[in-house]
Image 1 (spheres, rainbow, N blue to C red):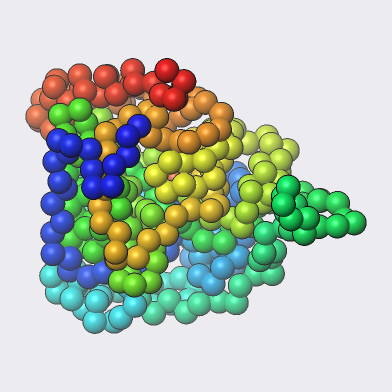
Image 2: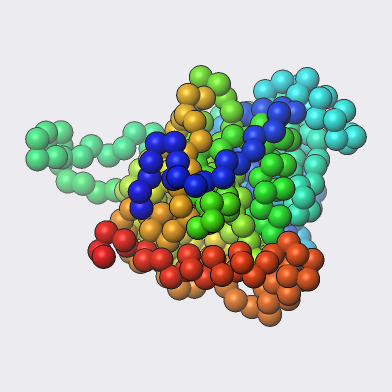
Length: 367
Ligand SMILES: [Fe+2]
């Protein structure tokens, strides 16, 4: 893929609306889960830690300082509910409440704080929070293992023995969704949360179809993406990604998940946009969860870059993308597709371009 500094010629810019507030970071994901015991077993093998909390929600934290990264609500069917983001100032919540007509509510979870609860155009919950009290980090390895190179032997007289233990998840990095209202949904996140596009990938006719959005933290660097919206044949959750320390944590974490009998989804490899080393797993309900390490960060000097949406843009190296990764054909998807065509949110021209995309080679450098 030709990845040019300011964009592939013919790309149509994604309009950036004036933000209401600028969030500082993504904080947590919220799911509905029919089998909370199985969800808990998966998350603990994945490297999260259960938090004691009153109320019906089951909470899980990482080794970092947020009191929870994962909220599981009891329900008869599994589903993705939404995300939580954090703002630095109480005034941001007040402005968001005033603009949206929503109330400021108490967050009744460990750490307290307040939040404004919004719904994105597809109906997902977005909790924008302030004042959540941080907790002490959990003890974990904080420096990568010493590595010997051909030029420098930093480890003399000792063997490399990364511990066989769950990859300690430190924080939530990002969440990825598909939306039938791609442009409207991407605009909504930029407007309500102040996210800005780091990379935008476009269909062959130049229309944006995948937006990698990061918090606007000014001169402080932010992850390449904290939220990603892609054009979808239906509105759906695609994956959530959690940051671990290094490649050895990723690899030994994989060993633990294999031992637990969980379903591997894709990896290990290195992404292109964001550069993360990645490894994807499915929870008991099929929701994809990513371990990653060594991702890119950018400050506000990074302008949006545009490129063509191609299979080869997904990863730089690693095992092949499995055929069952991501959205899978199902009766529900066909129904959603039919409704999308009837409502004209999806058209045959776009479908043809998506079909063309699916035929692009995953490894163009092998051509
Ligand atoms: Fe990801």
